[in-house]
Image (tube, rainbow, N blue to C red; front, side, top):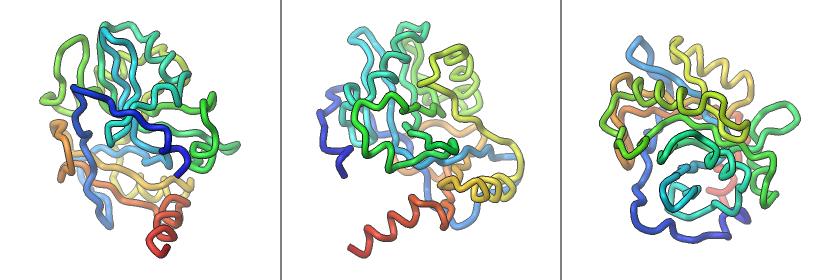
Length: 210
């Protein structure tokens, strides 16, 4: 994959992000919130005394790959933070396109869709409930540059959110249990259900047959 050729290790302080567990159907009931899964790739936005770094889920530094996202992070009013999210490039319809993301280098159209806040001004938030982390994330990014946005979450039934995501052509949804903490590695409290007709799912199927 061309996009992933340009790599540099993030260095000390990197920890593996929380990963959703795959499932065939989304959970239902009031104990869950749901987010759209976009066709992009995972990116942690870290800002500290050393500056801004954009780190992939495997610990590679992609700051130079997305300078507009880095600029947006540098303008956020906080001393330090670690934001988890997904970088995407929307097509003409507004749908995330992995082909556009992979094809272009210093991409001015790339957007970081933030969905979690791990640290803020030296306070580790990973042991706080997800509702608290999301609330603080929304406040932190209020008024931020358009390259750094909050990925909306929904409190409707999981099956309804999933059907709507599929109807729009999105990759799927990620459901997260209320009150859950942030843990590195695969989590049973984050559930991923993919849209079988999405380009990302077809792409993965093709790669398996190669």
